[in-house]
Length: 265
Image (cartoon, rainbow, N blue to C red):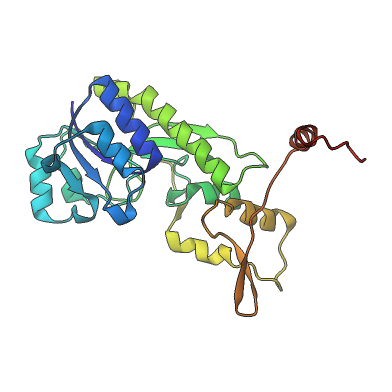
């Protein structure tokens, strides 16, 4: 099939490389503008498309862009960690619809920062391939895999694990989509959904509020993702940011062996 590829981030780059190696027919690329682009040069370099087949994701709602994409005669759209909402008038251009790769175990954690909310709210973590409909991450599920959240996971480590899971799920499922053998299942309801602004309600630690140990540790570890700022408390007019390091007992023993320090217990 002729594919229009919409992508950002490391996962977008890995999928672009894999599609190119397979010889899939990528007839166009929609990418974030430079200010929002991650791994953009790697994605562009992997696909090697001419400028007239590369589109700015921030301009998709313009009729002339939709028309230009329609000229490519793409059969299917493929969205991989793409950060713009795709409107029905856009997805209608594709006879086989638009497939989205999302780093959460839908219907949980639709929207943004699923790595954070799986830790904070204790919801399942995973990766999902689904069709895009008029909602945000609400379309029919093609395939998905769940991943356990370990007690030592931070927002960063869980995000990296979800990235790898997304790539594996996509590589296993894409051939089935192309051959028409992939399944299609309606999402269960209600699930959960988050906006970027939802982080504001957990990021400031109120020093006079009572938290359970679980609540506080989960917030701090979920928001540990250098170089992003994460959770903080106030000292007068200053914000003091908190990052945590989480180690198992085996990690500590390995660390001690590597440094030559004897166990003092």
